[in-house]
Image (cartoon, rainbow, N blue to C red; front, side):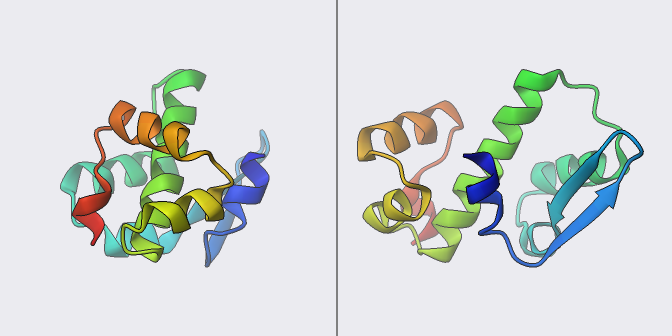
Length: 105
């Protein structure tokens, strides 16, 4: 399921870490208006993250949702369709990650 969502992030740079490949959307770094997001992406790219798997997956989920919100300009129904999520699930994830669709309109 994650593979399908990651394929929506273009252009993607794949880094071979020796322990497997990792993909990064370089536009996220350039478009990020939040310093915290930019720092997090730099840590991910450089492999300096100390977070456990759960925290890393939550970060990936947040980035995928943010990209979809940006791409669809905060249109919740379009984001739901793009991510193949029920509307309630998307709103639950937005709340969990501290995001608001209206911030992307």
